[in-house]
Length: 175
Image: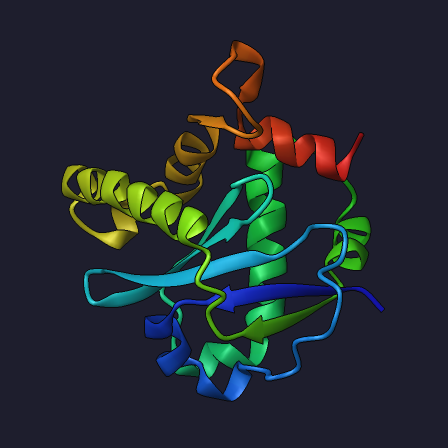
């Protein structure tokens, strides 16, 4: 069975202790590993999940302790909804099978992805001011803006090294 690893930041790890697995020897699956961090909008916990390979982002909003039982379903449905919004059309059952089971792990100290997430959260802070509260924030649109931003994957600074997260995720899932 496929497993998708999600490494949590220390801050998120404290909030989801029960979900954290100590088993480190499993493969990451087709989508590779993800990194998750927590941030707050109107004192509501939100998660930013970023794919380590494609830098594709998904935001889960207003996650309460009671939601942790269904976090796998919440993640898969949010990822599917974001993929559709970003123009990556695929069958939900295929995505579900590709993701498989989620495995939450302690931080992997991936400074590159952490820095990337911090930059995205900085941008989100600007947008939070614009929309004032969580209910007014068009989360799919804001996440689309993050995923559409130019990123550099690969070596060098040639134009060919630059892409965006949507193109990279599309390549990984469909092509």
